[in-house]
Length: 239
Ligand code: UDP
Image (tube, rainbow, N blue to C red; front, side):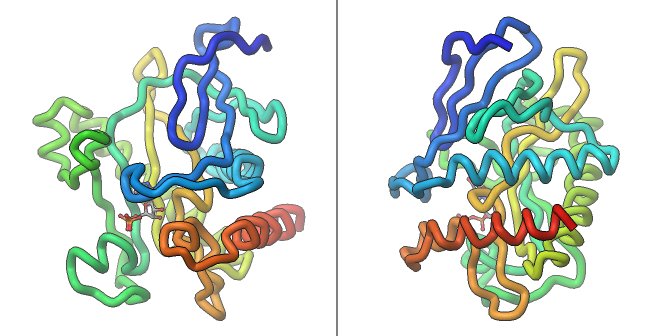
């Protein structure tokens, strides 16, 4: 597989063309941003961890019957993925109140929901990724009704898969963000990444944060938290 020209550079990843028009290479960086790019920094080793963690979780999700963009890990930081056109929605599933939910509704962090919630944000940096509902997404032609139904079904199923897996690692899955894309034939697949950048992961016993909130909130021990969560995943994955 030949790595050709860079197509795109995002906040945490670069995307390259390959000699196959249906395949791209994603290259994970150590760069970290928060608050819509206002806070910038580096988390040493993050690119390697996010690449490897996302790939392991995507393979698990694929095995459970949900299609993903994952094809093959090429190196510590590089992965071959199917080319998709991204549905411009951030799909957020929550099991426990935290972050923007706690702030918006005045609910203390850590309150456990009776059942998981879903919400969408319109992926648009200039607008600050505003919250939107399914009707707004359809009005804006971001996705069709059928696509939104598929996305909701996949997202809740992914929550079950990930929650069970992380529980086995002694980790509570608080919330996470997913992105979906369309293959050239229109099939909706899980895309982007699943990592401590995009999930809130708390130690089940101590509730210690093992995710990007350590960076967002200047809690210190950022690199150690990423290494610890990866260590837990690998230990459990190899059982
Ligand atoms: N999230 C993300 N990218 C974003 C916004 C949120 O990956 O642009 C993830 C975040 O890591 C958390 C979940 O989505 O696991 C819910 O985030 P929230 O809406 O609470 O926003 P935040 O407090 O991070 O601004």
